[in-house]
Image 1: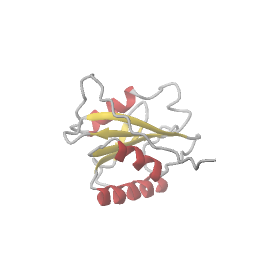
Image 2 (image 1 turned 90 degrees about the horizontal axis):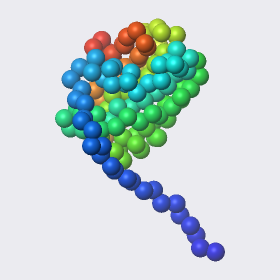
Image 3 (image 1 turned 180 degrees about the horizontal axis):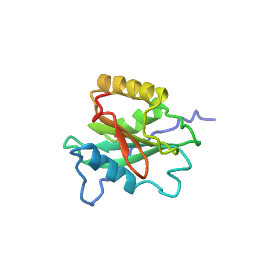
Amino acid sequence: MKNIISEIKLKYQPTKLEKKKIRKSDDAYNIALKHWDLDTIELQEEFKVLLLNNSNEVIGIYEMTKGGINSTLVDLKLMFAVVLKSCASGIITVHNHPSGKLKPSTCDISIYNRIKKACKFLEIHYLDNLIISREGKYSFADENV
């Protein structure tokens, strides 16, 4: 029997739709909110990544994880596999707090710092980390975290 090795295939199909440019945290919030199920935003925590080109235009949104009421798992290996395969020049990470409270937790700050460190090493611009709810957002960039 032959040894079979799995092949990883990359498929890049840019959309024909107008690309949305991120100029400020409100732009990222509005785009993220349009791609969120508002029926579950107060029920289940989710983590997504906005993938950006060199002009800070959104080339895709990676819906990374759905978790429980209080948390969701963020596996950096999986996240950066997608970021690198998409050839993104920059990223914005976004997650919701089902409680509606926008203040970052210790875990939020910890994962932000780990992502920031990896982005620096990989020369990927980490523009922001947003915590969102129906009513608003907390932007790490705006708050200089």
